[in-house]
Image 1 (cartoon, one colour):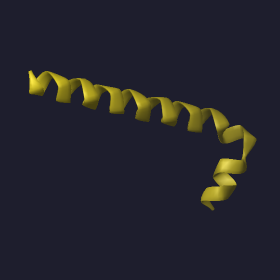
Image 2 (tube, rainbow, N blue to C red):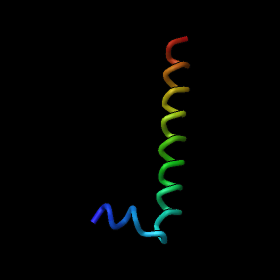
Image 3 (cartoon, helix red, strand yellow):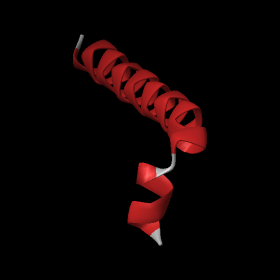
Image 4 (cartoon, rainbow, N blue to C red):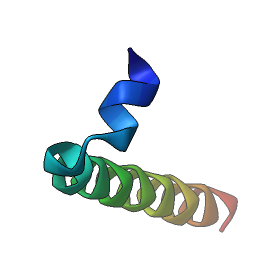
Length: 38
């Protein structure tokens, strides 16, 4: 089922936006960790 979702062209936009959200969340976490170290 998951592979069908990945292979479906109509869902590629949602995957892109989910990836961007994940990247943004990771960057926020890294920034917070840097602030906590100072």
